[in-house]
Image (cartoon, rainbow, N blue to C red):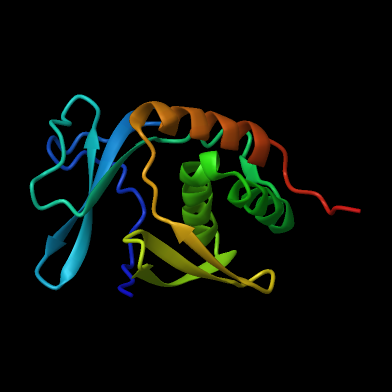
Length: 167
């Protein structure tokens, strides 16, 4: 498994050098540069698609530092939701997205990817916050489904409040 150390948003457009301000939509790409992987951020206006050499890209918005901080649900809640998604074959794409989120949040660690005898690629995850291993099919959602999953996750797993201790 290859790990990349990704720097935070530069808050500056790579193409125009314009400063990105709170509320600005921007695009980020990861591109190889020698032995390194470098992040480049582009303003919405300067974005013309990812460079051919891009490893990946995503769209985001510069947060407003004055707005309420968004907090994720506690790890146990996220794991419970993830395990619920795994029970429904129609939710494999959502389970894949939540798995990636949990890797980023350091709730699970990705050990490897493997291709089964059925030809399906799976991520092998190890629980860090709860015992257990998971094998998640790599199912990339369609663009329409991405919006649905994002809305669902935002409503279920995010809050504008600061986290509190659970009973």
